Image 1 (tube, rainbow, N blue to C red):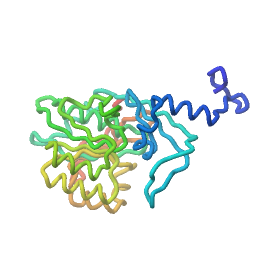
Image 2 (image 1 turned 60 degrees about the vertical axis):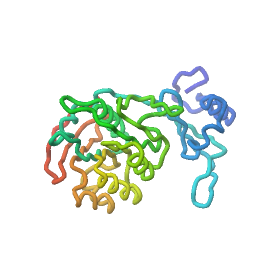
Image 3 (image 1 turned 90 degrees about the horizontal axis):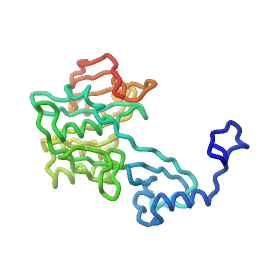
Image 4 (image 1 turned 135 degrees about the vertical axis):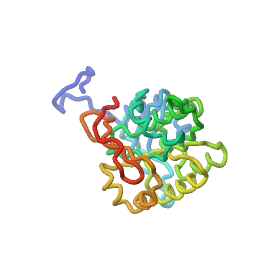
Length: 271
């Protein structure tokens, strides 16, 4: 992009961003109170009004093996939040069995709409779907991607019976919700490490339904991950929704049940 704000093809015509530009942009984004965003900066992003996220990168400050903060920030990635209300309409009938919500895992390659789909599933389960009454939902939004909270207020519609723990580690957050908010359904994004799996087992044993997502291109790929393989062998999840990598995000490729029976195999775009 050139000095005039128009796209250009030659690098020499492009506007070269300076360190001062980056610093001024960050200060403006943070409302000239960067110190108020220390916790988010440590995680590599800031969430601004509207649920939009600004990813940042620079030199990390370590405290042992943990990231304490980031300085000399010279890289910014602006991700505009968008909510596709009703995108889960197609999959909702598959999520209920004998008037209860099934434990569900959404499998998707990056940028294929898994968080967008999960967000609308949460909204519809919370408000009620068809003849199914609304249920209390607890969301652990570790990276502020599901609710898009700004100063504690969700910028996305997650339903009238939904409670959100923002910027909270998934494993710890799941147990906090179970102990304090009595949810019927617990929803998290991008599970995978050992602590997540332990928390998932505890949530299920407490009688809560789990809704989660994971990166993956196929069921076979998920089976290669030892921790998830155990959950699959124990038939913890009762529904698997596989999203395909197509020209548009949000294409359902397959829906399986816990036994591997294919409930749906044709493609339908959610967008």
